[in-house]
Image (cartoon, rainbow over all chains, first blue to last red; front, side, top):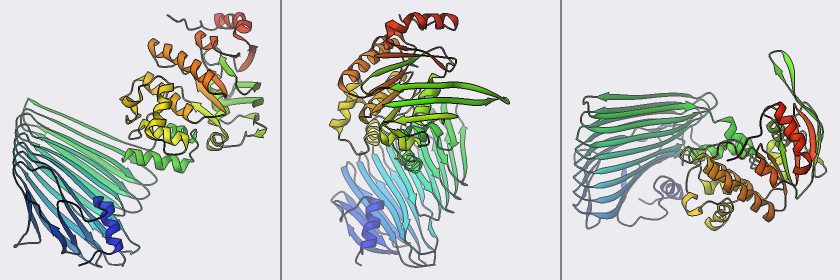
Length: 307
Length: 241
């Protein structure tokens, strides 16, 4: 299967790919494999019982990357995929996933990616996930990503998740369990416009001694769009957890932010912060004094906020 | 050159009209360093905001280099070459110092160019270029970054609203050096709203405002006795050290 120019543009947006990437990759379009490459340390094997792939990263794999972008452009297609990542001990790898939807018809299109990470002791994983949709079709573009994370002893995962526009509806569920000394950082950036709906649910179980997490979301809701952010941190041991939701609300948008902390240990230290507000008038005025119009000022403030 | 002609500004204070500025007539020449001083509540910051277009005068005219700018927006005045440094610098989540300098100049600046402006205000550029302009910066750092963005605009007229507000003594000493440097290096008009005698010391002309009226205009030496008189009847001039 060949990639057309629309596909290439989507790949550029969701995975920063201008060409076929170096190292291991698996490019999927409309529910089918387009192209795959494995490396000496990263193996990709198709599942036989359900759609999806198993990724095996060998112990001690350092400074390698894996790209697994998905494109959906077929009218009416609802793609569902299960990807399991087995990351061995003492690795340091970057995994870039993402889904781009090109909708050119009145039929709904969607992708539900269920990603499970099994990260072994001492490994570091940077996971980048971008969601984007475009096209002039009137059909809904629906994304419901599910991420399950098991972090082994003294392992670390940084998850950057970005939904920058065009997605009609999304429900993002992320569940994580941390062992002793493990650390999880989640940075979510999300912008909704028009009548879009975005729901995010994070649930982090801090089970191990001295494990920690930071779950940070920055969101902008414009026009009639709706956002729901729920972040639950359960401190079950001597641990540190922090969750923060910072949202800019505009026009007639609607935002719900629900951070929730549960402690089952006297040694658990948990913090939550949530703030929703409009763009501060003084920020607009400051940028106007630099020669920007009100609209340009708003755009720069949002761009910076979601950077 | 900036001309203020019969500028008045009033607000509604619980049903009563309160006059903040009364018939202000003033000419600010190019290449000169003007300091507007006076007791708290005398209307200094309001006047600065009226020049920038943040507040609109109730009556009167503002002429900038021959153009009537009374009805122009903040953006239009900025494009004509007027800059404004805020008393309390505005913070932005996610916007870095380099990005703010780029916005100020109107185009993407190189690291080298951004460093030049930061050096002008006594900041070690390498430490700041990628910092976000947020609560992680101290009052003195924010103030100097604010001034650097103003310098980057290379304006014809620059207004500083109480630059000494919210900074410590050490930062204030370097602020004075920064102003001396700017005065020598950049040939443009400066209006500084200030209570500080040491800022008055480096001025070409001091304007005393009290109860919304101009009481005196002239060199520091000329107006100083009048200034002491006004302050002693209202509040004491902020003492240094």
